[in-house]
Image (tube, rainbow, N blue to C red):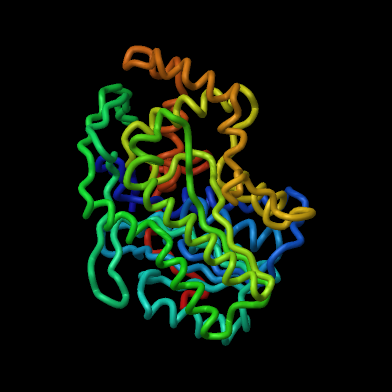
Length: 396
């Protein structure tokens, strides 16, 4: 079938298998071109099919020659509906991993559930024995609590008052004002339940109790802080409350794992085009301005460059892992440089519909958005027939 992009707001409802495979191979090639990492041997990535989770798995497998288990919730093709981008990404990763010396396995299902945790533990016990790195990179708008059955839904809202700022429709280039009403206390509670640290803690506890968590194991989860421009809707909003909970969980886990020489971190990463960031008002316009500045300064990184730097320089570099005064790993350091932020702020003041393509890299943002789903990728003939029914090797 001929597969073309179909969008609904900040979501693309189709995905192209060949384009996704090409994007995954590009990341693999990048990692293979870098110096090898002396790091983990057996890695579990929870949320492994897109974005930072996928990049983490690629770096572990092709940078450190580690065995990997990827857990993710994606859908295969059905009828006229294509599979999700994450499904195609994982199929491409697993196919490439078959040609390496490392083991690789995929589990598809709800990472929040006890069932998937148990299934993952059984796989680790049978195939790897234990894991020494656990990457927690789950991005979901909804969670069913495994013990109570309560359904939580996250929201992207400010706290305390109505928020107004510039935003952009990255499809049309129209710059408008976003107006977002503040969250209720219950919305804050539910957002923390979905995006906070409780499930991360449950994963580590389950692995530990099952005896498949290696002594000296490391675990890392991902977060974002960003500039003042985005704080009201992000760091000081409902998502920020959830990230605070995630960071508090890291401190508890660090103490818990430290008894056996282990470590727990939150890595604060750079703002990038992801399915999650596309949903947050203001952020796409900020990223577009940021990309323009960082590309002009030669500082731009994508997911794979960020994760290679995290693994090679921070988690498994020489000496102790460098952290800030809150214990956070900061691979957003280039984004938050004073000269970068000063130029972004200057652009932000003048950004409008009439000049958005001149003062920002909105075209680059839009292209990267479609590349998340396998479109607008060099070397792919989008007028040719593509087979949407792609199997994932080593799917358990």
